[in-house]
Amino acid sequence: MAELTAFGYHPGDSVLHRLDPRFKLVCLIATSLTVLDSGMAALGLWSAACAILLVKTGVSMPRLLRELRYFGVLILFVFVARAFSAGGDPLVRFWGIGPSRQGMMEGALVGWRLGLVVLLGLSLMATTRSWQVKAAVESLLRPVPFIPHKRAATMIGLLFRFIPQILSAARETADAQKARGIGNRRNPVFRLVKLAVPLLRKTFLDADRLAAAMEARCYTEDRSTPPLSAAAGDWSFLAAVCALSAVAWVLSRL
Amino acid sequence: MNILEADRLSHRFPDGSMGIHEIGLTLRKGSFTVLAGPNGSGKTTFLRHLNGLLMPTSGEVRIKGVPVREDPRRARRLVGMVFQDADSQIVGETVYDDAAFGPENLKLDRREIHRRVLAALDAVGMSGLAGQRPHLLSGGEKRRLAIAGILAMGSEVVILDEPFSNLDYPGVRQVLGAILDLHSRGRTILLSTHDLEKTIAHADRLLLMEKGRIVADGRPGAVLGQTERYGVRRPCAVRWGRAVESWLN
Image 1 (cartoon, rainbow over the protein chains, first blue to last red):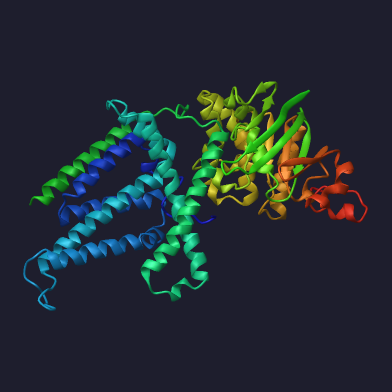
Image 2 (tube, rainbow over the protein chains, first blue to last red):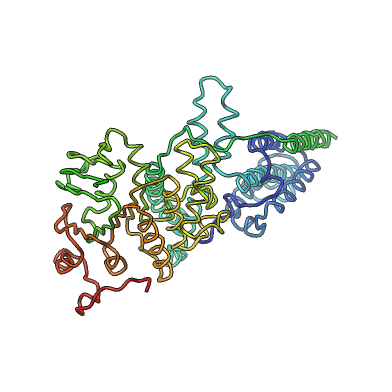
């Protein structure tokens, strides 16, 4: 477990590390919604901003891209599906169907948006401790009626804690299976089942062990976590994100 | 003075099998006890009763005279536990956060948490690693971090379940040094293992478990002769008729 996945907290002192987690969450939600409605020019702007922030966090970009390769397959699938189904003038035809220029543009746009939302989420994960996520969710949900904010915040905080561990376990299991020649089996369903069963078993066992370790250390939902406090820098960051969103909105409608 | 008492402790699992059977045990404050037994002998099941992670089917555990069942939270504060798998008990994203996890659950104020965390990390020689990601630590450092985590809670009894498993020689020495340091500061130590070689030179009592029962209990010199009958190898030095040496020498 010495080498962790890129999905997880990376200690540092970047702008994102120093931001109040409530502001980070609000900015992430607002930015993601804007990105999903952005055109090519606006996406270029968002991508540049996201790349700068990610580089500043200290996360290794080549490693991040390597670990996102499976998500890349999903984006490719979306691109191909859009290219063939969006209508317009086909560039080439095979048995009556073919990718259209409009479909390819649309597919590229959707893939870009999805990829950017994932990168934005990763920048939050890389710079926010799970207790900060818990505290932020708790604080933001407190005014919402009928939602047990402490429980919801605990669940989301634990989810953040567990994602890197599950990915690390998946890598270990996959390596162990490669060492036993799983590469010779071409059936993807067989390979998926052989990966999923031990991975799920290990994940549940780890969850059980972690729960026991937390219980042994008197875990409770009502803990004395460090207080959150918004500073001028947090408001400035929020203002910058709002300004960027406004520019992106205008660019998307030109 | 006894700090921990287990009285006719039995645990039956949901499938009907017995985990432990009629265990009676008292631990003197400040003692260093080694609990040995082969895999599956019930060591971990027994240890998990001592801070209320498991509740007995019958019998009772008392910490400083108060039954664990009455106040499990108090028991967990007084009886800290280091688990066998160091990775699965890491909760924080940094060494500091992980050591602070217990005191935060006790709802201490931030200044007191900070003081305790620094003192605990210092006690296990990890002050310089406070900002480090715990998963990047070596095996020995992870165990020492787990010990710091329970030190920061102010635990008086420290239970260590197979603390040397998967550790290399330097790792064993680091962890053993930290355990002996705790003991010298008055903590009561209960350490489970199936490998007596590394610890028995420092223990003042040896318990042997087999099939959920304590089958031998006494000073190490008196019990070592029986260990192989119960599936635990005697230390090499004992086999050669010599005194067992510390791994720190």
